[in-house]
Length: 247
Ligand SMILES: NC(=O)c1ccc[n+]([C@@H]2O[C@H](COP(=O)([O-])OP(=O)(O)OC[C@H]3O[C@@H](n4cnc5c(N)ncnc54)[C@H](OP(=O)(O)O)[C@@H]3O)[C@@H](O)[C@H]2O)c1
Image: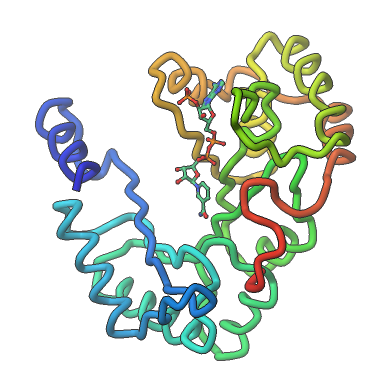
């Protein structure tokens, strides 16, 4: 509701049109492991309608299944997203936090593959096999939590950091590289995603950082630094809790 009100105020006061915005919404698919029954196809369509009503929009640019928690309903939920796309309520449809096995289910059902898969991606969680599969199957990677490797991430008193000692030891490397390109650590990490062909969606409440986070095209990370960053992969994500049964 608050997002919808912000979008509509912005459209009225900032002189921009709906086509200037890219709006993504997500289906919460349910999660039987939490006693939360998976959404059926009909419920999936109703959830999208409810999101559109809250946003005050006729369509979203991208509608995603938030996580592969649908179990037996996963493919039915995906069929419903294809229906949503056909009806014009979503320009593109995709998934989030799906691994190759989940994507293969869709392929095995003979259905069109998702336009995108939104996953945790940064130099410490590079998921090379999944990314190769996604590019091969025309699924665009959207990176979230790109800023996890920031030296300032979760360092406040009482914040729980999932960074391993190995990750912490890499921290200075990003600071040194950022200094070499005369950019911030955040810009370096976001540029890494863009340079790999991923969309990035940094979140900030700070207008100066927002400006910094879209200024990613005045520099390029050189091959040697990209190669060094490729060696920093530490496997599974940090923000997306490890040990999840659906992963
Ligand atoms: N699909 C999923 O399951 C999933 C999971 C997690 C996140 N997401 C999505 O991904 C997006 C990113 O969210 P995220 O929480 O993962 O965070 P993120 O963008 O990686 O990091 C956000 C944090 O970084 C700080 N920050 C932002 N720009 C900065 C800069 N230039 N320099 C220093 N610090 C900076 C922000 O603080 P300030 O506000 O103070 O700048 C905030 O604390 C969100 O839209 C979220 O919805 C999706």
